Length: 322
Image 1 (cartoon, rainbow, N blue to C red):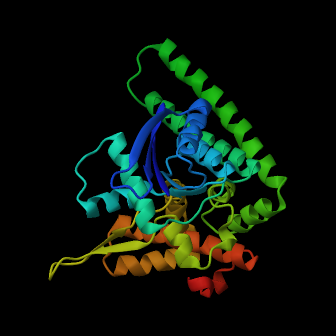
Image 2 (tube, rainbow, N blue to C red):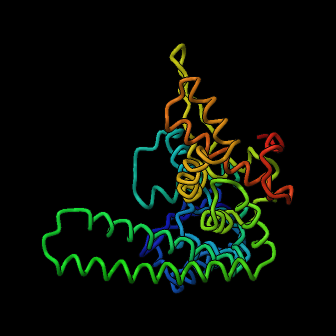
């Protein structure tokens, strides 16, 4: 049995593939009451276990995924890009919540995606704090940009300054809570401190990567780590036309965002990244291609130090596939 779930803020559509020609589709409210209605709907059809598949779209999906897991169902959270690519391969033209739920169910049946389990409560809290900090930093940047614009009213300028002061306090408070959560967990603290030893990755970046990638050392190799972040190159070529390389974008967009500015810093201050970027530049690679490659190398370096348990050493950067 396969259950495709298309989740939105207020509701979700469930498509059940149970061997019949067409899936059974039903909509439910996206809240605890709706979750119970889903389980009753399954029970009324004498269905005890399903392989449920949801797109990884953040809190709206994870709450439902967690409840499915707690009820003993196999759950998979998949990157939305994989589902979109699958839909294109089928020639899908209809784009509705009902059709999307059925598409996710067919994807689950065809590809048998890996099972997911909910992170422990401390990790959920850490991820929530890190993502909230990023949102507050975005707000602060917007307000600072407004100050550099043509503001003629002093009351408006004062309002922006007051808001900036408030945001500074909020960010400092959240950063303390992030530090406390990591410092009180030996594994997280060790991972953060090892990542922080890499030039280009400061305390905040190391904390954020630890939150989004808490089990970095458990990945089988550097390639799997890069794939998780969507930093593996994909090649497009048709016939004799020139092949074009780009990022696969099939992994975590949050990790890619976290690595962008650190990669730019590392291209100046990290000997391994700077040397690598220089070689790419000498081969005529475009700036964004070089930055993306530096992001990947930076993440692989993070994997190397965490996997080995040893701080960054520029003389040893040939290890772990670097």
